[in-house]
Image 1 (cartoon, helix red, strand yellow):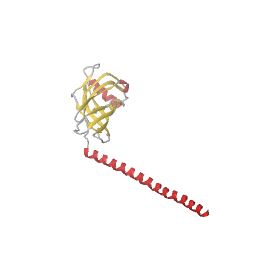
Image 2: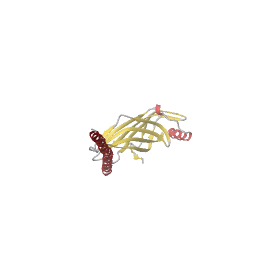
Image 3: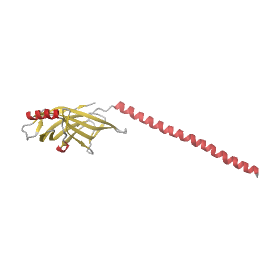
Image 4: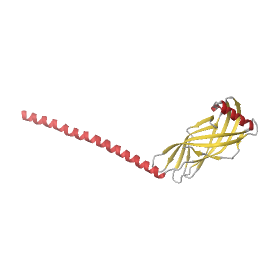
Length: 215
């Protein structure tokens, strides 16, 4: 009877030890395999996008009109209507443009700004799309004394030079690869707008200008 009890005790004590050791060694191995898998996958995706190397979109400011102007220290209040052309120059990669921010400056002085969310543009390979932006008087900013004096002097001549900054979130898409996103900023500089009267709408004199990527 004593022999039987010793046998049962030895059997029940030996069995969990072996299974516990197997379980304890299996979990770290599985974790290591999963981590290595994701590391290799991320490395493959990184190398793939490095080889594909999508080109930056080309953006052109087609038109800029300025209307409903009020000049009162320290503000130059106006409505701005701007149209851009966004061109996907990639032959193999699709482009999605989202989260657009447009800022109108006079030299280093901020005149007006706006954000466009939830109205993205999808551009297939080697295609283009128009992007229209309106900035109202509710987004007007106050200017420093020196900047206000300079823009007032130009306004008196009916010719004012504006700068426009366009920031976008660009998503590049190809095949089954995850989307590659980049936040990009474009500068449209020295936009000369001519006004024919103090109450009239000013129009861009140059007829359009290419915007440069700002690194």
